[in-house]
Length: 366
Image 1 (tube, helix red, strand yellow):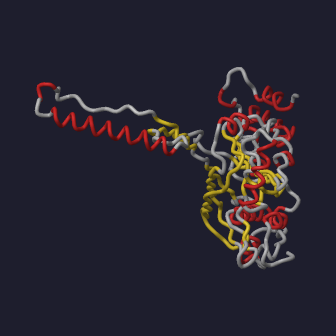
Image 2 (cartoon, rainbow, N blue to C red; image 1 turned 90 degrees about the vertical axis):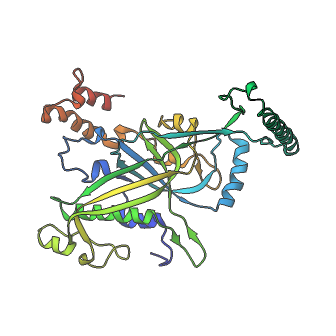
Image 3 (cartoon, rainbow, N blue to C red; image 1 turned 30 degrees about the vertical axis):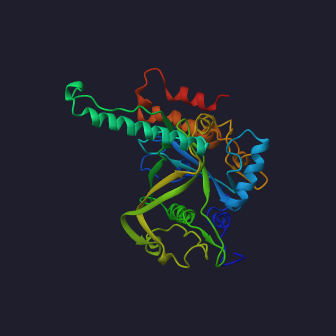
């Protein structure tokens, strides 16, 4: 650690994850108690994050964006200037939430199109008309036979679309330590420590700080966001909790090496529960649109990048490579999926004409 008062997230991740770029909870962590063939990774809904650290101030982003807009037809180009940490996080998406949007229309205001003087004049005429109608109604109240008691004054006004609020997503899952080993305990512990750091800023000196990271978010076939952030994080200890040094006495396995200064100096300072329950909330940094949603669903078409470097280059998502189920899980994952039917004697969703061997072919062909 070259400077004890500066901790870039990429440097911290290098210390706890090593050279691993795909932090794949679905595939490589113990987050459920069943066998691998009971819940093979390709069957699990996934939430995929690509991580970036903000590289410049909002002022620089604005200047960069004004120049990028002149030469690109991407309406989101240069909104956020950031550099990738080169890590992708793949989390289980265990939620019944798919989509919630609130659309708002409201009466338009006179003069709202930019012509203030003309708008004020129109508004004065409208007010005068309303006053005249009000006076006429008051005058006519004495002649009740001319009015039906059920009548009312109703003014129809045009309304303008105010916006669409799309609810961000959350995910909740557990990292399980029971019936596991010290290596798995530390891997789970380190991921929890990473999440804590990902919600905090880097105080670089007395006045300068780097904000928490931002992400692109994809739930395949459901939701895509070209820029979002972790808005809420909750980590709970479940079951019994013991210091790691006590647990190590109960096993003959080799203790994992600690990594000071990013981790405690002794195992006694690390507490391991039966499991950690993790809940992560996200919020959008780009208002969802047809472009972000429709183009984002096709992982071979990153058409609407909002995160670029200081020179306005193409989306840094491309540096990770396109997301591909076969690349993520490999042939072995597909074979595990095929074994689901053979070992559990059941077909996924009880589909009459589809076996897992056919699913294997779909995953491995072309």
